[in-house]
Amino acid sequence: MARKQEILSDAPQPATSAPARKGAQGQGSSSPKGTSPRSAPNGKSSSGSRQRLVVVSNRVPVPKDGSTKAGGLAIALEGALKESGGLWFGWSGNIVGDASDKPEVVQGGKITFAVVDLTQQDYDEYYAGFANRALWPVCHYRLDLVQLERSDTDGYFRVNRAFAASLARLLQPDDIIWIHDYHFIPLAAELRKLGFNNRIGFFLHIPWPPSDVASALPAYERLLRGLGAYDVVGFHTPLDVENFQQCLVREGIGQPMGPNEYQVDGRRIRVEPFPVGIDTQAFARTAVSGEKNALVRRTKASMGDRDLIIGVDRLDYSKGIKQRIESFSCFLKSSPAFHNRVTYIQITPKSRSDVPEYKRMQHEIAEQAGWTNGNFGEVDWTPIRYVNQTVGHAALAGLYRMSQVGLVTPLRDGMNLVAKEFVAAQPPEDPGVLILSRFAGAAHELNGALLVNPYDTEACAAAITRALQMPLAERQERWITMWERLQTNTVGAWCRQFLSCLADSAAEAEEEPLEPKRARVRSRSPRRQATRA
Ligand SMILES: O=P(O)(O)OC[C@H]1O[C@H](O[C@H]2O[C@H](CO)[C@@H](O)[C@H](O)[C@H]2O)[C@H](O)[C@@H](O)[C@@H]1O
Ligand SMILES: O=c1ccn([C@@H]2O[C@H](COP(=O)(O)OP(=O)(O)O)[C@@H](O)[C@H]2O)c(=O)[nH]1
Image 1 (cartoon, rainbow, N blue to C red):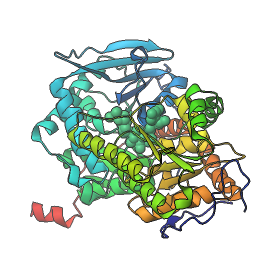
Image 2: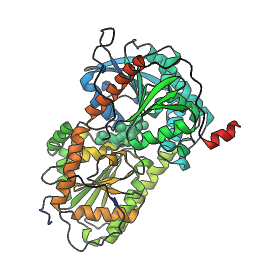
Image 3: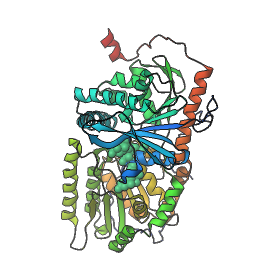
Image 4: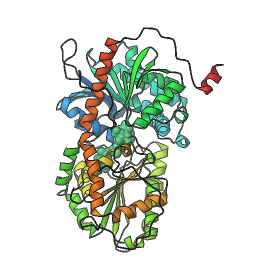
């Protein structure tokens, strides 16, 4: 039976009895519309030739570099491309003195990787500057952290133009182009300027905020019009879609044409939610074999009979790690029965360390973890094991599986694949409990989790107590609803649904072409009317 979504807001209950341990017997879509698979890439195009899928993302895991880069986007796209094959284009990850616009091409199985370098100035302005000090904080509702520099804005558009010129060298007329994430909002507009009429879709992996927040973006109108150059614009959740639609209408940039369809500057765009997933079955298998992983075995041995709480996040302010450690401290304070009975492992690879807001946070969180251990720890017990290491998927899956609680409490997150991986990794006969922020995109699907407000320290502490004491029957009931959802909303389904929608949009454009020149939409925004007056 499906469980209702639930926000925990009750005050922490002091633990009076020992926890109901995992291992012991306890006592007690948002699928988009109109996405039939018409002429998805790698099927036949109208000319009869084979259509190639071209994926563009800033981060490209070129096989030769061998490094493991934590980040959901690369992991999701790898899952999507490894079956269909195609071209994957983006940044090489290298910063050089003089960047060539000729991409370096590397073959990896069915995927052709093509990457270009950035100069230091490009990197500073486009990636560390505009993408990660303007777009990222605004889209994560953190206007207090926004840093606006005109040179960063100029750099962002300049680098997008350069990426378009490099990609243009590789494109074929029948290619289906799928562009990913906030680094590349203007890319389709740049390709259109170069004369490309290919179907181009865009997927945003991070949240899209309401118009009052989004309008703090520099070049706001230009960015919105840039999104109008795509055929399909996809987001993780219906909330992001609603927010984006509000922006189009309030700015007077998009004229509604039908359900989830807008006309922007004479072009028709579809705006839909496509919740990204994981390769659920494969991840579950990895978790089973992960039990034999050396790191997992050592960790298990080091735990004794303590319960394990796990958190896995890039070191990013959006992940709410600071608030989470505060909640864990509050839990320890309010639940002395759990002292020396539970360990919280927080795996936190460093991320974007050359962005000042991230560097500052590294010190704060390390200090906070140290303070909690100093305050609550005992000679034979360290409550928090805080590590700044990247852990590979095999070990990670095994660690999730041996955990009683998964703590996933971002202040705001596009999706959060860790939440889905945690669920997929659980043993059905004895599943752990997911504590999930209501502000993660994943909360729209995972309604068997204990949903929390991450800003509410006491409620989060209470959720930890509740999770550790939850009877087996309730854990199983909650887990099964999430597991079933994850079987449907896989990364493969995400990919198919997006690409079918893109193919459908092509067919619709042929059936009902827009008249070439339409009058601009009249604004309904009072603010905008005032500035025009
Ligand atoms: O490339 P980085 O700057 O090192 O950052 C890593 C990635 O972080 C973000 O991931 C997002 O995509 C996930 C998959 O859709 C989603 O689950 C998560 O909520 C997002 O934060 C970013 O959007 C990617 O571009 C980065 O590569
Ligand atoms: O040490 C780590 C930390 C994270 N990840 C992976 O990085 C991804 C993080 O994706 P998520 O959507 O949760 O957040 P993002 O970092 O993309 O914002 C997940 O697949 C994690 O398994 C990993 O492989 N090793």
